[in-house]
Image 1 (cartoon, rainbow, N blue to C red):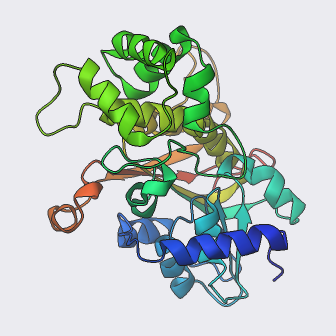
Image 2: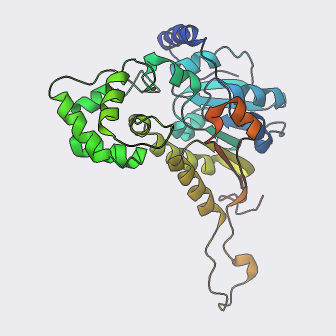
Image 3: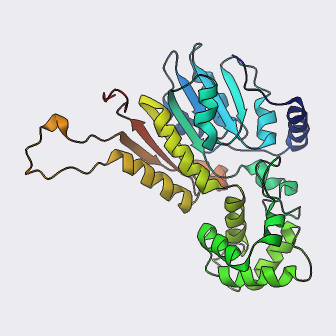
Length: 336
């Protein structure tokens, strides 16, 4: 199989980033459960890992794929791409793009249907632990927060140019932060004298503004989450990725999504429910049973990490995995 092309310049940059980040460990959440839910048993199946990350799910999936099956992974992060390029398996290829571009990327490869899609949302431990990425309020580093550092605006640049109202809306809507107004006002006041260019500067500014917070939670938690989600268009990508996954899934294909906060999980839950529940006409109408609207997906369950997994990896605590199965082919109108 030919791996989707990546320029030599990008590959070299990614490799150096991978080498520099090799020390950061990552524990894949719900590893066995996700692959079991995907049920990758088709001899010629095509499966998608929408967020390669550090490759935990992809590697286990490859160990269970038939010789004639394929796995295509996506990721925006250059370090993830470099990690993926270490896999020497003709069944595997990696695409440097968001899963929100899944349909176009797969169509370019001549693929119009897949048998399973896995999305492990959020941010990986190496991204959080590497201060140079700017995701963490616990270590000082440049205020970047981009998952793909080759494109888009950094968090520092956005905070320097955004209006007070826009900052307030982002912090409130994406961080569910009740002190969003005060935080936005403080950011605007601060940038009148000096830009906010590091994670520590932003964390200290938020801490001085937010006077109360839940026990054990850093005052900057919600603000950092909100800005990261906005900078990377995570919720917009998720909505697009879910819709594209559904369109691409063959009958009986599985959609497996692991989310880590309520905003993500709400979108996933509502999307799956919208495909699994169809409004039925009035029972008093003379409509034949076979002509009634049919659900397009079947909900297969909601899974949370075990106590043992949470104890071993506290970052797994908030994870929720939802699984649904495609039932009907729109083109043929046939059930799975």
